[in-house]
Image (cartoon, rainbow, N blue to C red):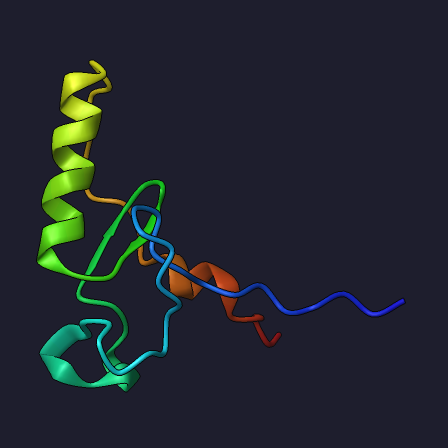
Length: 78
């Protein structure tokens, strides 16, 4: 049975990556998401702030910036 491709979505609200109301770097989907964390993508500044607040309140430290999660989803050619 074929598995479905991984669908990237906001870790806070579940909004799917690719929707027009998802925020992209310089407003271009080709540039990737504008916000993300080590847990995944974040669709807007509001979700980014909510994610930070939730993790801070839970006592979870946030370390250095995480790599772009979409880079991890793209197959490498070699």
